[in-house]
Image (cartoon, rainbow, N blue to C red; front, side):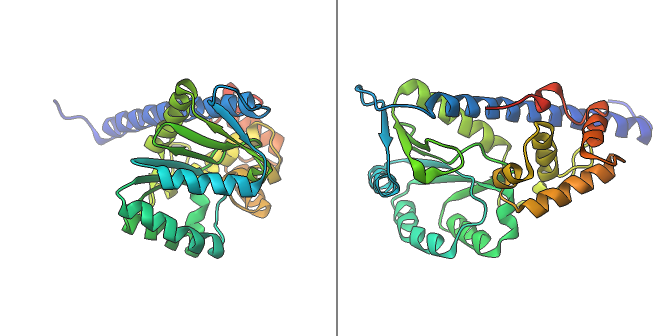
Length: 275
């Protein structure tokens, strides 16, 4: 240990922080890649004869299966909830079942989009979950809706954009290990509900939400796709895009992308097309 000038000390601390952020970003990219690979593999899945994969075709069938799985859970429920703000009716309808599970000592961990922080009713419901023993964290975006029961059964929709069109129930050890690993990776990097960390800015001066919009824009996604992915309106996406263009001193999105690449704000992987 020895004394150094404040200028040198700050440079060292900033360099370490940038390295930590880069490592965290890479882990999130690995998790997203795993999720998209899983979605691609099971989007056209058919019922299997060994009981490891079962397809549900109707929304009522999906809801009945969720109720059955929740009644049988013994230890833990892990969930991705990528729909942003929830309706008041859905939240009130979920409370009795959630309360019963928490009273039974079931560990409930739920990942929401960061955009829910701007919706007071959804925040109130999430806080209610936490107050009753649940755990809630947020991330900028989620790949798909997912429910994992006791690390033994998972339920995911057949299509990413419409969970009502069908779902698959998965029970194989290999696929459950991958899905649980995906959840744990995203959970580790997520922000607890009561934290203000989601609003902190990284070494580029971006919040996590702005960084996610930039990443999705770099992949060529439309405003509508990005809005659904991060749980905000298309108008909000356009506003964030305009702010990013201003930060990058760009007159167009194309120029903004070029500037972001030159500054190292995005990488080749960020700009690669996805499933």
